[in-house]
Length: 424
Image (cartoon, rainbow, N blue to C red; front, side):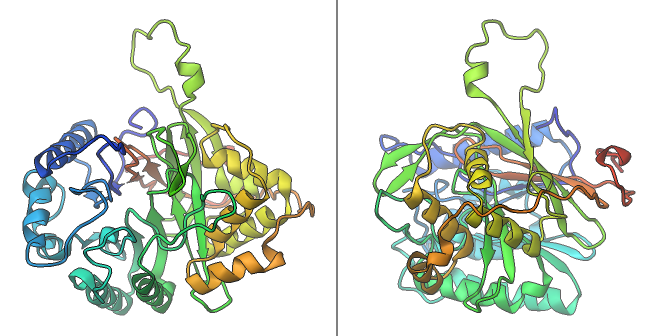
């Protein structure tokens, strides 16, 4: 990413640093060593850039579980000390991190990033499934959002695992939930309560380029999130974890500095077939990532707001040609399988249904079936833009979001009329 943009404002790193393999049985020391190595790589590549890390389901030993009892604080201290996250997280934020692996960071006046430890709610985490509020994270989240609302702050919520349901399943089966259902309901209630101040939700975990639109059981879409795909081309064909191959990819995202709205992202990818055929390494290090597509431009929407993502969702439901492109983009151009009707239903329901009630209804409703209804051509108007960068930099499915700011922006009728990378 440093060859695309080397001076971001800050980096959001949403976790997963160890290989997703069955034969790997690391200890906590190996886990922390892997995290430390990635931390040192990031800090050396992007010196003097704030880096905001969060915990992935493969950042624990054993994977997928973290406790919420008296032993938990020693584990979180391990991330700070052995993983070197004390070099990344402000000392004033350590207290909540040691309590439950979560913290909030004021990026600048008016914009706060809230980092969640989604592993406490993660469906395979048997240590927390019977707890109402593991690590008191719900209570803390409600309090920090209440304070942000009173202070007129906009908020980005980040984490590794998104709320809702997976988009992949064995043939003829529904996808499973990402969280324990009681925790999912509690989280969605908080998101709905504070949706007016939540400008973005940014997650990883799926290894695919996805987005979600949230109804919060109201029947109206009132929130949304972006999911970044991974750098690691890992995949699995197990019935309980169906994942298809992906090309490594990184993301450049544009946002408005004045109101924190997301405006656009450019998806870059590494064509593995192409680079594996290279017979001679270049003498100088160069960027080998190519532009795959730009989201808003391709789908003909003005920005990445919830309203725009709902428009894209409606297009995907009804236009098979556009859906086919979406599915190719989801794996960063690595099209190894076709998406049949069952696959399409899984994608559409995963995008639009975050609660169990919505998800069950999705599979029963013919309205969610894709058709060949044409859609209007993409509009070509342009808009004011400030840039930040989203990197998916993974040992295994680590997502990094790098934020970069342009000081001046203006409304333009042509993309070539504004400066894309102007540093402050």
